[in-house]
Length: 435
Image (cartoon, rainbow, N blue to C red):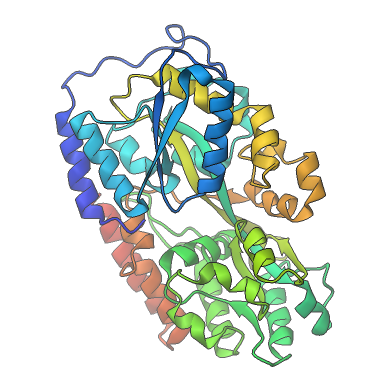
């Protein structure tokens, strides 16, 4: 997500200009053969996927397809994450594209807007599996009521809490906080234990980490964050100021480690497993990591709360499977999508490997029952969302963008919060208006 957006826009424009003036009409449902979980034609399929994503999961999925479909195996190539978006745009412009690809879901709307992905609506719109597919993924897979992809894998944010520290602080280890007021109270008690223990963690220099973990606190409190376009109002709702005040108070109370101020995301995933943090927003990937770091630590997972008791939200990240313009194997790519969403793959590949299923109705399975923490984090899919804007990088994810500037002023200054919000709002609107 660190790709420079201006360069991306130029690449997309070049790709758009390289397309024929009158592209052939989209295949209709009547014209397309019904999707199956097998080959539509013979011959190797090419697939690109970004590095830095859930490589282990994608490798497993490709291996499962290849075992079932030896006549059209997928040849998977990983592209460096920082190069992926530009490579896709350049490939569409030159016609050198894979048959299908995994795409960081947050960038999908920009490519859909520029018509660089194959419109799959008439091929997939009636699939029953889509009724329970990850809502966040399907939101960004849709542009102007047209569908361009399905989930490849999901990352969701949730509240991880250290049950050992809860017990030492006199808190019930089976009752995580259900509101920000409770979270503050619990954090105070955990920090009071001393010995370098802190009640909560905030990543002070990582825009992406914060939209993943602090963004849901705002959503759960009724706020809107990003501007979807130039006419939309960003940072609306009382929840924006309420959450900024909450985070400021947590820092001032000493509930957040001092070193977190410089956290740029490089060590974010290692904080909870240190055993020194009582609670933090993080992702499902931290289940395995925390256990590897600290095998004796007892911890639980709950939903990220908002101001009102019982409110909750989550950021749904991950990748989509999409088909770039120029692919000559669209039917096969669609069959791969059908395969990924099938009951068998959802349970026997995703769940068996203790990765989140991308369909909510597949959460109730024997593998998750044997590992309750995965089932707990999977509950975030039902309350999750994904920002929808063609200027996500500039508004939210840029290290120099208005989102991180606003948060840092809230965390580490005494600036008036109304002014802090107004400044960020103005900058976000200006960015969205240029899209």
